[in-house]
Length: 92
Image 1 (tube, rainbow, N blue to C red):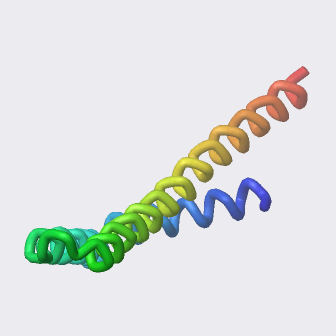
Image 2 (image 1 turned 45 degrees about the vertical axis):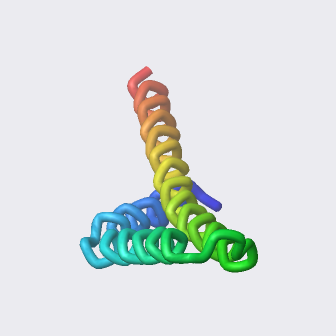
């Protein structure tokens, strides 16, 4: 993937992660799962395992967005560095 593509994806991920509706969705799902864990019966390992897996999926989705944003930041830095080097060569 090119730097420009990485930057575009990072911008989109940042836009999505900053929307109140997505933040609300993450919060609501996590709260719902934790509430369900609290209400589940002791010894109900099957339900508990499913709920833990649900929390892990939500965390994985959030981590994926963060990874895209960080990769885009690195691509921006790399692009800026290359542009600065090109300018120095032109000025010589």
